[in-house]
Length: 183
Image 1 (cartoon, rainbow, N blue to C red):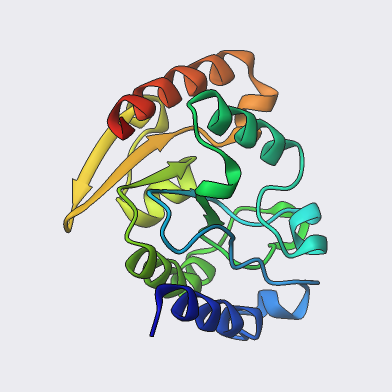
Image 2 (tube, helix red, strand yellow):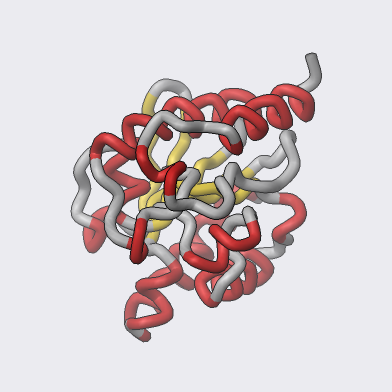
């Protein structure tokens, strides 16, 4: 079975998932999008209201900023895979619970396995703690972390960068570090 078919099948399972109560309040599950052959995967926290409405990841203001930062390092949104730890929106965009993270994590792990990106970029504290363990974001950002033959890169979430100019500048610097690894 091709990687595209494996990813399509997995995304269909995600769209019909009922493993946690979030399926009761979502409009659409948001599996993620991008080529099954992406060299870079971006992982955020959870879908927001715009994502829940459209079924697509990072389509609001955070998505606009993420897309521009991706372009600034010579990539395009069409060549990377973008997803989140959770595949359904938590009510009022609250922080995901450990139960919700545990329910969705196997889906994300399977996406990473199918796509096999060169680098998995973790956007924000929830993504970092969910996949590589507890790190202080202020110390982790701009750093690579390798575990289980996988390379992770840690940076801020675009939503934080929209609120705090200093974080936006740090995130832009982090993306420049990331781009050096991708050469």
